[in-house]
Length: 213
Image (cartoon, rainbow, N blue to C red; front, side, top):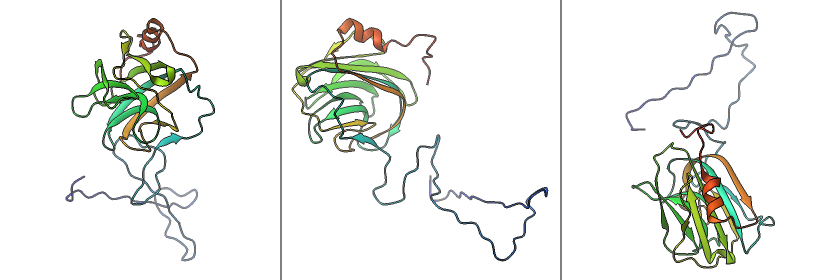
């Protein structure tokens, strides 16, 4: 908001069984408020106030992960940049390399990456609020990987390299960098690499599912 914008919040108390906001108080009782949070658009979970406040979903508990192979499906929508980029998910080493899907700043094109320093375009541009289903499948610890979005043919990820993951992030990557405002319907993992044909089928959005935001 601009410095010229004024926003006012009011709390009204009312006496039991009395119409309107008629309670004048008794001079003793009080109302204590804390943790108020104001956001543009749809509210998120509670974010504690502080200079470094943020709302991230990141875990280092990777006992569920097969380090050699897997498939991750993301279903949701971006709703704006929160950090330096827009990541749907990232399974990464916390510093340089990872396996995941992100939205390119400005242009809005989706990219996949697997252990490389650059992403591979996935031939789909999405606007903020536009739902998409994107999946990444990999083997050899990420040295071989492919991705599909919205039922499109699977695309091989270029410059793929092995990854040693230490964390899994939804809505960000690399220790909470490249964060996005995100609406996530679901994120699913399988400890196997889906074939390219099955990967495309997995990401298709049927009319019954709803292809809108």
